[in-house]
Image (cartoon, rainbow, N blue to C red; front, top):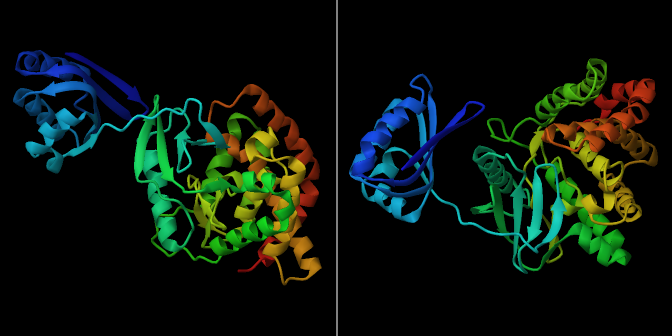
Length: 395
């Protein structure tokens, strides 16, 4: 019987490996007491390598469940899970089975984002693999947000299967005959206008949805502020304050926002668009959603063709047509004004995405720092002037 404890931030995990039988229980109980803190409120037991458990072992788990207010057992193999289920443990404590394991070796990458990479497994199935270090709670949050957004009316694929890909978590989706909007535009550029109408229609559909009070969908503005504050690790206080000023100029709103609606995150299925990446959804004013998309589709920092999935000239042409369709019916002067407002707010997203991870390559960070002066610092007066007008965009 092998026992060890790991701690990540406030999360303590007890790893059990081997057979927790009667012969091993006494020594195991003593070792667990020595390794765990009686002052803590939370403990997770990782039972991935636990192959057998006896009644003596069950009593150890029961005593731990009584000691810790937040107690759960994860990664339980089918044989041990059956024992826990038959003895009623699954009804009195949180117990989750080991996840099915999948490989993405040799699979086509169809999307890369700040929180993970999307692969095509076969003609019917895609999988989103979260970046290293993503917790199960974060994965469950995304699933919960996807389901809530689906109920509200956002056209999104729902995953019912969490898997492990190496040491990372993955969400599996079944999408028959679907391809990314990027791939469709690249394959059939002659249909650019049709795809632009679809893209604009998706934004309009989302922004027509009012998120009700009490929803678990978070505030997009609050999240954006937190991301900008995280940038103090890269930028000066003065630079961060300028970005916060832009964000604080954005009007309040309760519309449903995707916040990463670039063309690799939309799948075309039977002539309709469906979203597959729901890791950043929130509520707020539509300008924030459009600014995030503009940052990706027009002023992206990084390898455009790799991230967006089509040549930049094609992507920017798609965006220009789509935003014109989004504002269809407004005067040319108003549309030009709205575009200027979107561009100014997008300047923050050019850099706030760095908060998605603390492990971006140094060259990416340096590129962002160099671009800051060009896109924000040297345009301060213009940006402040445009920000004063954001309040005229009423919903």
